[in-house]
Structure formats: C-alpha cells, structure tokens
Image 1 (tube, rainbow, N blue to C red):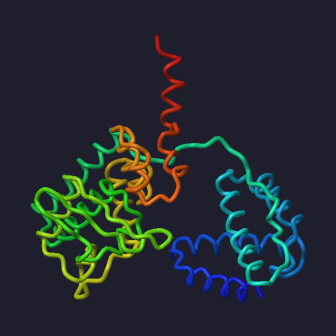
Image 2 (cartoon, rainbow, N blue to C red):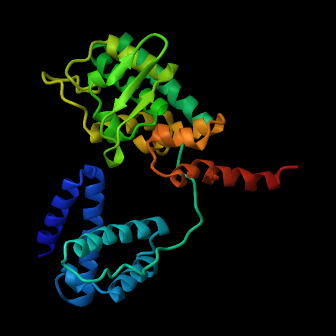
Image 3 (cartoon, helix red, strand yellow):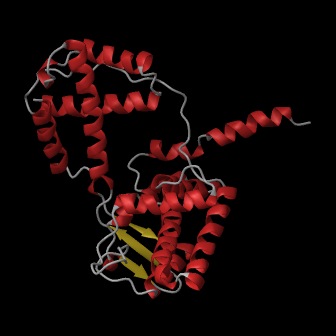
Amino acid sequence: MVNDLLSVFEKHLNDLDVSPLTTRGYLADLRHFARWFEQTNAEVLTVQRITPTDVKEYKHFLLGVERRKASTINRRLASLSALTKWARRTGQIQSDPLENIKGVASAERAPKWLDRHQQFKLMRTIENDVQLAKSRYPKRWLTRRRDASLVMFLLHTGLRLSEAAGLRMDDVQLSERKGSVLVRNGKGGKQRSVPLNVEARKALQEWLSAGPRGEYLWTIVEGDKAEALSGRAVQRILQRYAKAAGIEDLTPHVCRHTFAKNLVDNQVGLEMVAALLGHSSLNTTRLYVTPSERDLEQAVERLGVG
C-alpha cells in the first residue's frame, strides 16, 4: 500500500518536472514517516489515515527521540506537506492534517561556502593536479582538464548541479571578451542566461580546446561514448579535490554558495545576485548576508584578543 501511494506521488512529481534529486529526497522522507507511522499505530500508512495528532507526535519523535536538527525536521514536514496537499487537491482527503502544524523555529544560519583561504587552497590543488597529469600521466590529462575546468566553472557561475550537467554545446556563447550560458530548464522550469566572467571563460576555453566530444558540454571522456556526466560523477570530482586540498565539505551547492557570497562581498546588489542564481524570492538570497558559523566563531575569538 505504501509503495503504491509513493509510486503514484512520484509520478505526480515527475509530471511537475521536479528535479530527480528533490524527488528522491521527498520519497526518502516519506518512507521515514511511513515506518514511524506503522510502528506507532500498528497499521499501514494511507494518506486518509494521517491525522494532525500523528503529525504532532511525529514532530515530537524527531525532536525528542531522534534529536534531529530543526532543518531536518522542517524538511521532513515539508515533504509530508507536499504529499497531503497533493492528496487534498486530487480529492483523496477533505482536509490537510498539516494545515496548522508549524515547523521548528531556529536561528537562521548562512549556507556553507568556501572562505578566501579555502578557495586559494582549492585553486592551487586544481592547478597542481592538471600540471602533474600533463607531465606524468598523459592518458589521464583529458580527464583532469575536464575536472579542473568543471570545478572552476561551478565556482564562477553558481549554477545548480542539474543546470551545469544539463548544458549542451549550443547553450554556450563564448568570445575572447565575453560569454554566457543559457540555462534552459532551471528550477521551476525557468530559463535564464548567465554571463561568464573572465575565470569562467578561461575554464571553458581550456576545456573546449582539449576537444570534448558529443552534444553535452560536460561529458565522460573515458570509453567510446561521450555521454553527459552524471550528478554523482560531478560530486565525486569535487570530493577528490576536497580531500586533496584538505577541505572538509565541497559539493556543487558549496560552489554555488561560494559564488553568491563572493558577489555579496564585492557589493553586488541582492537583486542581481538573485537573478544570477535563478532565485524566485529575495528571501533566499538574503541568506548570503547572514553571518556564517565561521563568522560567529571569529567574532567570539576576538573577545580573547588583547
């Protein structure tokens, strides 16, 4: 029954063109709720059997038993809310059991980004990696060239993982003095053109001069087929560089956040930052002027100086 419910809901998400990553997140959260529901109530989960009391108890379970962070609890409640709203719109239930349920309040924290020192370490690691491959491992050089250009591209465009991986060759406009990429299917199905700064143009030119094959910009270079790089492959590339540079956390989203933070630090207005990132709300963009954990740590450390 639960699998049937989630399969129909997954089809609904696919029809809405929700990203595969978001869909997997929703389904994982809903399976967690289903396990809790069945263990607590000794009955199989159906959307008609979810009550406001269930939701409140589940929230208390996440807080008190699993001791989850506010962000995790709110995400799981949001996934459940997506399910119940869909069920109400399709006439499966008459009222939404999450309608009056509030999330867990928490102090707003900035997303993770790389500070200047971390960015320097990463750039140096990338440069050394390419030079080493060219001089000692020529068969690996094309792969390393792609990896280096891809990471630099992510850091200087702020594209989401799905947006970067989905770029095709004809989405790129590049000349010596300017360039842009067309994101054809951003979040919410929105298109936007993202201008390329000098570092992003350099990264692309170096990759394109290496002679990539196929219709996609970022492709697999080992083997006969020039298929698009998967999201998992991009994450592995970032993890390899993070380990080599001694950086604890490097993901496509950290690259995106770093791009945004660098813009804000250079006095670029939030409206322009939002347009470049493809944000539909300035409230999302305002996170980049929120103090990070590192900012707060440095503020406290100053008390011990002098």
